[in-house]
Length: 413
Image (tube, rainbow, N blue to C red):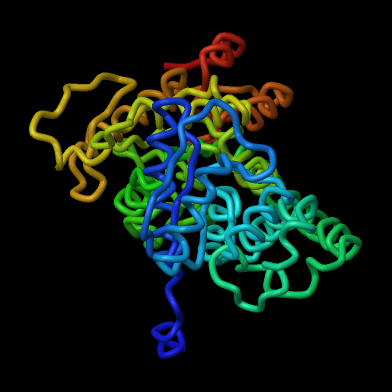
């Protein structure tokens, strides 16, 4: 297998994009990172300043001629476009250039197909790929017929499945059914955590900000880490013991990115919903990134789309080991180095303060005939200790203010 990988031809790619805003320039830089992550050799970048995308060929005819000349002279194998293309645009460009053409969405899906390791992750990626390809069959026909045709054809693209629209629809239904079963299992896990009163903290952030490194450093999770986009896809949950001895669950989530494909968000919906149900979010931010503010906005947009924008959040500015001067921070902003485990004391304090800000330990004495109040405590609080005496049941519990107020007559000092 190693020999096969060594002999595998690296595809020479040219990146193509429309520039209409400053963000588009940054997006092109990111496209280069995506291409490298997918295993391509980037031999050129071509952009065109225009306000609209050409409906037939994405770029104008003159720029297309220039692209063809460059592709022929540089022996380009692949053209990667920075926007989502229609099947017609793909077909027209490939016919004119005589080179394989993929768009940003297909590139991201290809990386996901390469990175997914769990059964759920692979199903989610396949679902996203099929939904992307279904309306583009006419344009993608040439690509889909290639067995092992390189970047943009990983996953279900290596079978004959895509040549039949009906088979694709049947496969989509089958995958969705399997994912529904997995989601039911995930819901049971959430209910179990809720019943056990274990707070859940979701680690979110832009891809390659250091989320998995932070999870590893805090919990010794041994999650795969690499300095590439989308190094890990499959969510990992680990227990974390805070300085007070209390336990929480830390969940690592898939990284966000500009123009995150809609089909991908839909396919990973059950996984991403872990964010919505979390008690606290740790938004990991690469403090060294030149477009840090823009990436923060991208993450907040995705959180808003998931219905999690109002979930309590701590901004965790990572990679301070690369800074000359480190900002002071506050309760909602912590500066750390996940790699070197710097600033973890302040981070853990911030987590504990936020998660348990409305919780205090209270002792109750419930007479044996107060079964209603006893059941209420068992359901609504985390019981730390329980002893039986002649006067009743002595209960030590972590309670919120409203519960303390409701049962104030049974509080003992």
